[in-house]
Image (cartoon, rainbow, N blue to C red; front, top):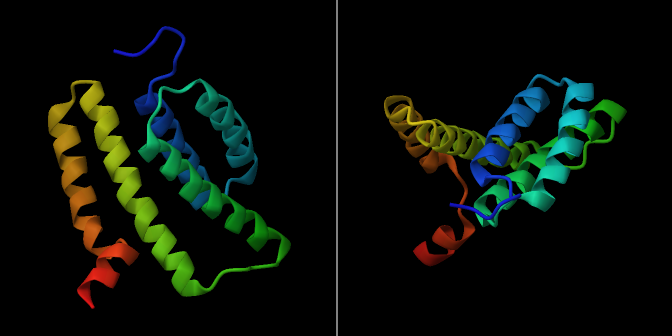
Length: 132
C-alpha cells in the first residue's frame, strides 16, 4: 500500500469533496478552516497528481468565492461555468474512488457513471486543438 505516515490520496480527495460542498454553499468559515487542514494534508499525502490538480481547481473556485464576497469578480461567467463543470466531474470521480476504497462497489459504480456523464461538459483544450 503506502508508506507509513503518509496520508492516502483517497482520504485527501474525500476531504476535498467536503471542502467543495462548503464552497458551493458559500459557507466561508468552514471552507477557510478546511482549506488550512487540506494544505497540511497535502504535504503528508502519497503522491497523486490528480488529487493535486483537483485541489488547484477547487482552490481557484475558493478564491473566486472570496473575491465575490469582497465585490471584485475577476473571471467571466463562461470561465466560471467551465470551472464548475470540471469540479462536478472530479467531485463524482473522487467520491467514487472513495466508495470503492471502502468496498462499496455498487455506490462507486453509480458515482463513476455520473462522472462519465460529466465528461462531455469538461473543457479540453488539447482535444479541441486536435480537432482543427
